[in-house]
Image (cartoon, rainbow, N blue to C red; front, top):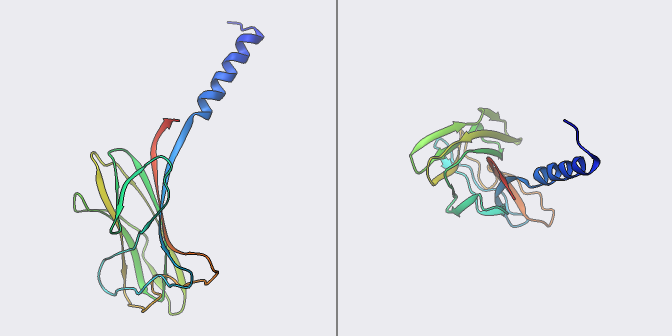
Length: 175
């Protein structure tokens, strides 16, 4: 099969248009506090909900609700990525909890956060809710640390950010 220059140009332009119209939909949730405010006291010996109080970015409406540290997504397929700081909490880990179905989604790695050190825990999970589903981020700390067990303030004059949770919609949609 052969194409003339006009046909080839039209096919190339259509392909460019198709590629440019594909959109990766990502929502970013955060725990934000005022400048100089620490991340909060860690609770020892119990799974405790981590604060998520701000939709930092969600231009495509991936998150249907964020309230009381719980976030909700529609049926679909998603990847959740979390980074969360801890300070002097000793044995520590995070988990994603499916609140709607009261079931564990998954855990981060376990780590030991020595006295006066900061460690960031990372967690990645893939979820496939079959209906609108609500989730939360929990943490477990072996040692309570008043004021800054959940992050030390940087005092830069900007907001403090202590947890970042991305929800990536894995179904590519056209813009």
